[in-house]
Structure formats: structure tokens, C-alpha cells
Length: 54
Image 1: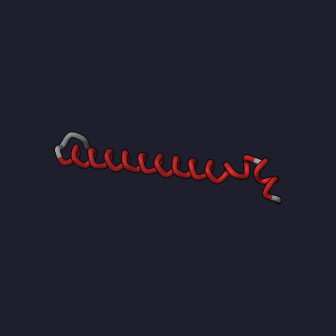
Image 2: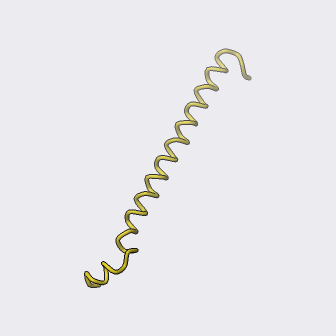
Image 3: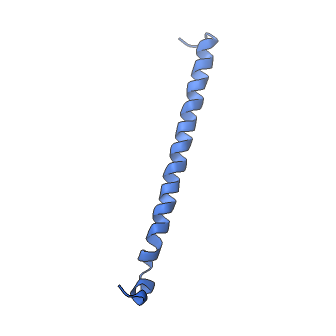
């Protein structure tokens, strides 16, 4: 494909940027879900240690 054809096709230039943004979204979402899971697990441990849950 010629340089001129690449310039006229915006999808070729924007596809990697779009994938990078979605990748970061997935990474940040996964980290936040994992972080909330750790916090919930720690709260459960503290509650069990205090005798507040079975």
C-alpha cells in the first residue's frame, strides 16, 4: 500500500491507538476488581477474628 493510501485511510492509523486504550481499560478494571477483592477478603478475616461472622 502506498503512503498516500495510508494517509487517506484513518482506520489504519487509529487502530493501534484504539487497541492500546482498550488494553489499558481492561488492565485498570482488572486491577480495581482485584483490589476490591483483597479488601473484602481482609475485612472478612478481621470480622472472623473479632467473632462477628461464622
